[in-house]
Length: 216
Image 1 (cartoon, rainbow, N blue to C red):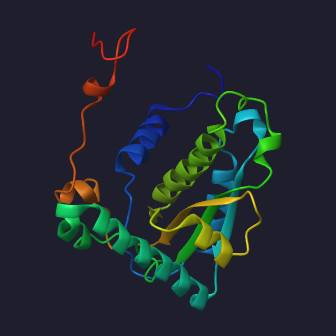
Image 2 (image 1 turned 90 degrees about the horizontal axis):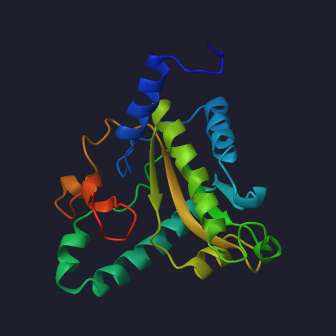
């Protein structure tokens, strides 16, 4: 057997990490040791990338005042989102949508500027830059779970305001505020399911055979 093969126990661990990954909103402060943070970011950087463009950029937020300004941008959008939701506004406002003040680390993840020069894999599907960045975020998420750290992806903010706050160049685009750190416990199921906001759909409803909408 090739030494590149994984053992049954190693495979089980991978599937367990995937199954138990959660979008966390509740953190208990603490810290992420520098060596572990470096490992997590390296895991993100090893993500597959269309045309090997590596479009992801991570901005680590260590200034507490700046963290507060980021949280304020999220709060502004939270209120706008509640208004847009109409009759579900009150239910939405009861949800905890971010843990920026309580988590150990805050990272803003963004698409780089100059993406238009990357044609390989993007001529007809330019959004593959976003797909590549999403893979990097998922790598970071799974690695964090393996390290028993929680992570939450916050997307409630106005991108241009965030870009201006962080001095980002024209053409770049922030797409997430990542909250990372120790948690008291991981949710047993997705938080939005626990809060009765939404239900997960079974794979059988989303898997088609040969033609759209045709189930086997």
